[in-house]
Length: 99
Image (cartoon, helix red, strand yellow):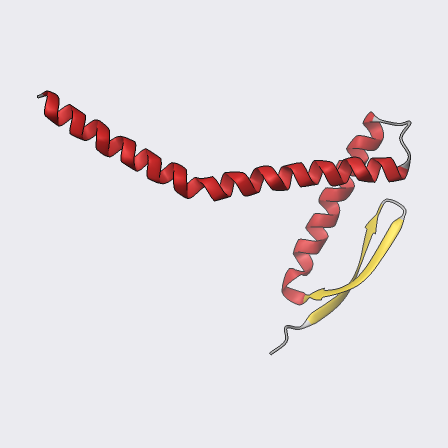
């Protein structure tokens, strides 16, 4: 069974992007577009001499770095939790053997 789709138009700077997206994902697309626009505006203020193309490259790199950081943090969370648990067990064992 195919999910319902919805037609949306996203505006990024001087560009409009028309697309069909899964209805359940429509808010995600809008938030993503807003986040891109916010980063673009920040870079446009900071680097007024750059072309729009150069600014969008900065935005793409900025977002990719954030995505990579988030991915690494999430993928390591279970490992860090297990390491904390193991460290606690080891500390308890060491404390019990010293007594």
